[in-house]
Image (tube, rainbow over the protein chains, first blue to last red):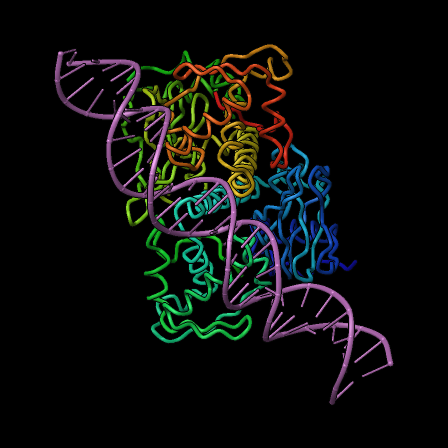
Length: 245
Length: 245
DNA sequence: CGAGGGTTTGAAGTGCATCAAATAGTGTGG
DNA sequence: CCACACTATTTGATGCACTTCAAACCCTCG
């Protein structure tokens, strides 16, 4: 456990907590604690009561649901700046999914009891949460569209594109990106099996002359990848409000 | 166009507008107008600016996205009490999807310009919107899980179960339900082709002794359907916060 | 009655999953 | 620094669920 005040700047730019005035944010952070979690550790499980919200400071956390027959669906894999449990707090339901650390993570916990008075005092915070949730819901609908309309290779291409830094979206130079976590987890995140992921990547490599070295991938021409991946999608790259880093 | 005051009671129970005091709701409704739209009519299109929010008073509206190559994904099909465009208003983006009337509908339009002052004056409304959005986001994640883990027949079974009135969830008597819209649209809503829908229904019919007469379906034992449909899903029926009627 | 959309049925094709096994990569203890 | 154990990733062969294409059927409505 450590004090969390020195994360203020990060939280201000990356999360809706930026809607709070400095003093209120500092007060809030003085009541929060950050903690390191190793890969594999659950932050909460499906069915748990929502006792606190958890802000990811670093690392990756996957949200999953497990069916009665034991298969696991990965809903999302989240990183710095994402607030876990917020929507469950507002929905008034227990956690409907598991949150499991996918890559060693630093997590800031805020007790749910602190939120109601904070919301009452700071309407701007409430609106900021509303905006965040609305954008996340849009992103989720886009995800659903992708599952319906794109094949495995297109979904993967789309994922790779979202790893390209915004400054290089229009670049005509080769771009090197690094996969942020396990290929197995990326596969699950994209709704496919590891074997399918591997074959999809191989086919993209062939078509687009990707250079692949473990988790490092060089895309010779971003524009060409865009053309192949965005064909059966309703948006045009860059299409995601929320990106993947 | 007609005045909308007489919808107050409906809106109070079915929508987050119920968080408003009577006077404020009535004022709001006096500035809103209801209008009938025939099947097929678009309420807004992908890319449109968000000029107003639209509350469904009756009928059905489908939300769809169209890919560059022309295929259509149905995100949801919505009915009485759902507020269209709210999340796009809060996200600050143009409409990312089409809203098209699927069955003749009565729609109440509220200009988006009315919302900011209303939210400023009524924090309870803001919180109610937050709750609604959070629940809808949960439902969407459940949908995503379903697409990942359930096969066509299971998704259909799940859909049929959500048409059973809550009072009869535990009943051991045969229940008759009526499909609320076209089988073709239900198929799209469930992420399958009409042919697949038809075969899935036929297989459920055989396994569960459904009686099928056009859009009227009799389920001899709800519990048996539950067992077959909820097997590869993380929830236990009744699992949906929001239901389908 | 006839036109046209919704629905069903059949036959064939396709993409992804599954199963199985090889290979590469990573961390551990000696 | 190496051998081992273990996991991640790739590759091949096969199966299955859903799609696609085609045609029949059915139902409603002018």
